[in-house]
Length: 140
Image (cartoon, rainbow, N blue to C red; front, side, top):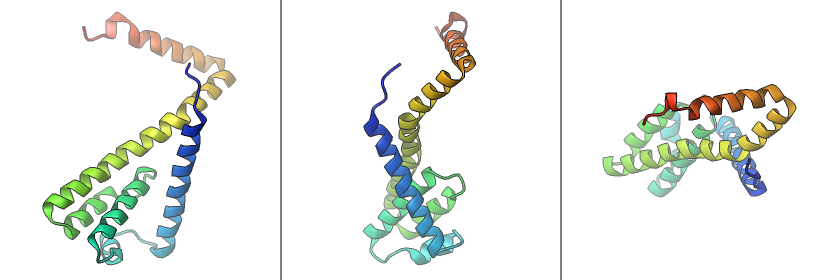
């Protein structure tokens, strides 16, 4: 098993902390998250608006209750089609990337703790690895 790097852990904790702080600010300012609330909160400067929407995409990536469809509709309403496609593409990339890196940074440490604490889990992981690497499930 690869040794876990501490900088990954601290980076993941910082990202989670910023996201939680952003959620607290968002809920303090607006109790309801709707298309109308996002449109009224958007600044007049298009670069600031794009940054705000990408920040909201970042918050969406760490929560399950933040509505992604509303973000996509707001981007489509506020920007012309090419810019909206680019911002939505970047937003979806953020939504997919941040949870991956947080899981990668925090997951290895958690799995090693759980397998050390529960030896049966280690056996399950070894059996799963053996099943997946067997020739019966290969696509050769």
